[in-house]
Each structure stands twice: as C-alpha cells, then as structure tokens.
Image (cartoon, rainbow, N blue to C red):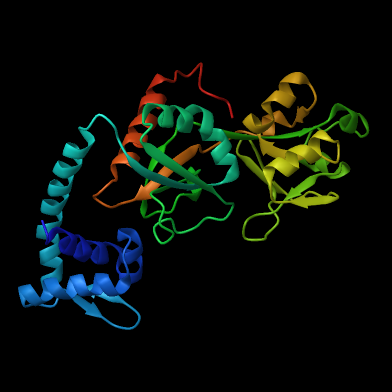
Length: 305
C-alpha cells in the first residue's frame, strides 16, 4: 500500500500531461510529486516520462506501464472506496464550483436534501461567474450549462433545463409600442448583461430555425443576475433572465414576458468532474442523488426553466 500513492502519481501525470495539474489534482506539491515519480522510475530502471521545460510526455515504456497499471490501481481504489462507503456515515468535503444562478437553482432540489441525507459531509459551494479550471483550483466538480462544460470532463445532466425569458413591468410595456418581433426591443430601454470575459452579451433569440443575437440598448450594464432582477422589478428596463429566476414575479403579474415564441429552452445544467478513474466518495454519493432525483421526474413535472 505504501507504493499506491506513487503509482497514482505516475497515472496523474500521464492523465494531465503535466506535473502542475497532477499535483493540484492530488493535493500535493510539484516537488513531492516529482520525487514520487522519480522513485518509481528508479525502482523500475526505466524512464517513464520525457520532460522538457514546456511539456511532459510518456516514453514508449511509460505508455505500456500506464496501460497495464492503470486498471489495476483503479480496481484497488474502487475496492478501498467500497469498504469506506460501507460505513453508516459518509464523511469528507465536497467542493463544487458554479455560477451564482446555478447555485440558486440546485440548492433546494439537490444540495439541501444531500446534506440532510449525509450529515457527515461538508458541502463547500463556491460561486463565481467566470469558468475556471476546477482541477487546478482544487474542486471536486463544477456545475454549468451543458454547452459550457469543458470537453475533457465527464458531464452528468442535472435534469434541470434552462429557459431564458424577456420580461418587464406592465407599466414599462404600456409606455411603448407592442413587441412582436426582436427589432421592436430597440424601442425600449433594456438591461445589458456583461459576460465574465468582459464582453457584452447579446440576447440570443430563436424561432423556427431563425436565430437572432440582439445588441440591445439601455441605461444599465450589469453582470449579476440578482441585480438585474432588482432593476427589472423597478421598471428600469427589459431584462433577459432565466425563467425560474423570476418565476414568482411572472406568476404574480409584477413582470410580463414578451417574445415568448422567440425564447426556447437551452441545454440544461450539468455537473462535471475530471475524467479520472478515482471519484471521491462524497462526489459519488452526490452523483447518485442527481440520478435518483432525475429518475423521479416525469415530463409533466419537469421544470420549464
């Protein structure tokens, strides 16, 4: 068992193609990781990696070694995890990175039931707008729209689709002409959303195969959905927000949607995690809850937002 961390160090470097990312994934320093890999190479008497200042790649011997050792290490870890999770109480920390909107969307249906079921697990939910490297930042998983999930990650659909709507107060909508087509939005003040990259987001509309990206005008440019919701409630302008986010206002009539046939559902939210063979027990339990919750949903009860 003392040699297992060293083998996992080799596999992590091979998987991430670098010592920096592998060290972040394993929660160790680059120096310690390099020493572990060197120890394995010394005992084998072969070099497993070609190293330069810019890249790391497997040697021919290293590729054969990883192909043969990887499945064996995965089976050992799976057996160890199975023994650990057989305990009555699951423990540990589950670190998840997501947007503020995604956090609000998943808290009630997923996060709260999870912590009630597994009181020994601490959930650390960190919100930020920008998309980050969750491995380098030390997160177990991330939650984003399906289209934003990095290609090298394993994605698990949450069963929570997302639909954006355009809405404003009844008073604001009475102040101008009817809105029957996207171009009519230019007759109204609108709240412009800013992307995490700093770019201004164009409202994406679609109907019957026709796609339009509207560069709207207005007195405010904002990057926080909660602030946008406050502004649209106060009648500052029209807003482009997730339907679920302003569901209460729409139901009460405080806000009225427009161009409903131009705002179809988008790809839903996904939880994603590294394509590593080892999945921490708290994350595995959370994935189980996601699948369980998704199976309970029926087409009639599925949210429209």
